[in-house]
Length: 382
Image (cartoon, rainbow, N blue to C red; front, side, top):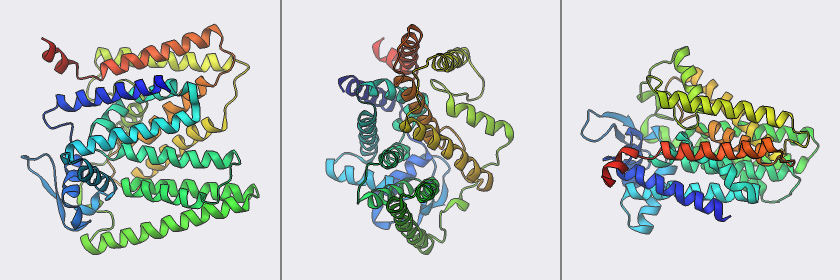
């Protein structure tokens, strides 16, 4: 537990340094939209938001383009702590990162620190440093998987329908892409029907019904106050070609640095190191006869692929979805967590497995250092 607490504090320190190193406090046009909605929370989804950095040529975008969840959380922290809204948004992010770490500790116990080292990836640093909703969103994804895992392990709760429905609603209120997880809950309802676990099946059906009813009412309200269900048609996004799709996929699984315009030497070295570790991991696990894929890691890896396929399908039909490492983060971070969890559960620790774990920890440490605002720190020191 102490190792994991230390890792969380180290990540929080890195996020703080990244935020103070940027004049805009690590914000994007989306960030300013969230903050505007938090400042005008009483207006709900009505009206328009100035989309873009302050002082630039801004577009007028329907407020309904962003669900209310993240802005509401920011507003609540702002009221409770009297912090400025921007600072409150960063508190929201690190608090939900801490909650993710708590769930992962419940799952992996003494190995949790090793599994959570996946959160020193470039993707994780970016989404938790920015004023974005992906941090809280990821927590609700993991919480949903926690309840699903309990059901697969035959741990019964009469309140599971409520727990699942609240997770589904929370996901939708944070990102409209959370709608994908309704399909996941529906698939598990079918699974429990086939497995003749009728009570669990009815709980998932009830949870989906409640979530769909809430989401339908929310979207109808959106349309009544803004003239749009999602607001997406007010934002023009460029259609992506095959190359852009491929780059998005590569960036989703790039751990320490992503490909932007041209691959520099640091990027190529890090990608090579990552490929070596992946190949080494595959060979080490294949040759270890004590290896067994646990239900938990099956759920993590399976749901990461489910989201990957779901968001790709949505992108094909909805061009307004900005397809990048950010929207792919529930795929990549679940994938990293599942793979690290898989390695952590190898019982017969041979010489190869021990050195593999040490190499992964070393790579995570390199990723941490690479993703610090190093120029800012050098200027500060010198």
